[in-house]
Amino acid sequence: MKPQNVVLIPGDGIGPEITAATQKVLAAAGAEIEWIERKAGVAAITAGDDVLPGDTVDAIRHHKIALKGPCTTPVGKGFASVNVQLRKKLDLYAAVRPVRNIPGVPTRFDDVDIIIIRENTEGLYSGVENEVTPGVVMSMKVATRKACMRIARWSFRFATQRQRKRITVFHKANIMKVTDGLFIECAQKVHKKDYPNIAYDEAIIDAGCMKLVQNPSQFDILMLENLYGDVVSDLCAGMVGGLGVVPGANIGETQAVFEAVHGSAPDLAGKGTANPLALLMSAVMMLNHMAEVNNETTCSNVAAKIKRAYNAALGDGCKTRDLGGECSTDDFADAVIERLEG
Image (cartoon, rainbow, N blue to C red; front, side):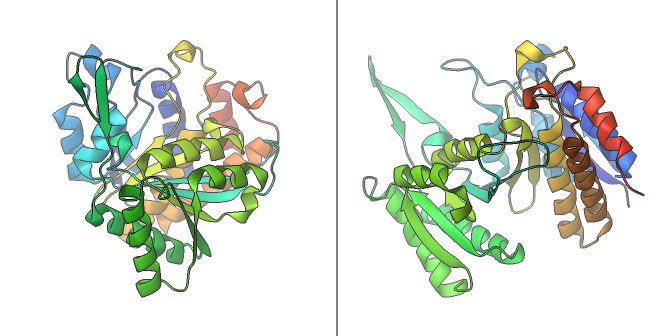
């Protein structure tokens, strides 16, 4: 495997611990990566810099790919989300979260295999807010035809490449007829014109969520606007064991950032009990992405090796406390390394 430069953002709270564990597994599996470490979040502020330093963004632009630990986001006050800023600055318009059952993690459902694709740059989640007059605040939901068409094309292309069978759009166009109406209009056009090979349907989001918790196996790929995608992806994560077992990617035309989708859990920092699995799974997604971009198989072979190893470790009962086990962060990483093949 030719050495690859990857920007590494350890993040805050448990971020540095799960990042170190992930790096250890990747190195043991033969992933030849040159890590370009940069800061963001509270770690950057503590170092006397901005919450999202310019050199961090510039490094991702230059090297095209990053692996990111969780960054703290204050609730109701303080600085803007690092995640939102990164997505806007780098135009990472497609968020991808595969949600599947994994070995050794019993849940209420045993047939979950859903990919959530979320438009990542617009809508209410983008945080366009202001105070109209004292005591009156407003949040603006923005949707553009360009962004709606872009995520629709990306989603149908992704579905075709991954040999998935159906895309379902969750929306609220019965009430938000203009914004959500534009979103489904664009999805319908792309499906009809370019991807009739992929089945397509729609569901009003509240009814869709009800159907999800009744029988998640009826869904394949879900495509949603920004805020809906954030909520529904966490809902789906709860069906397979929580945010500690779900990876995430944010992909644009030229850059991609892979990240753990859970929070920084500052109360657990330094205790060595955090679960590194979500970030490790995100690193596997990163390796597969690198293989596709570079048109080679070495990265994907390493990714497959790591995936088999963490599945085997979980199946053998090697789990961190959040999953009902007794493994420390390092214990789990070591268990995965012991099961690497070749």
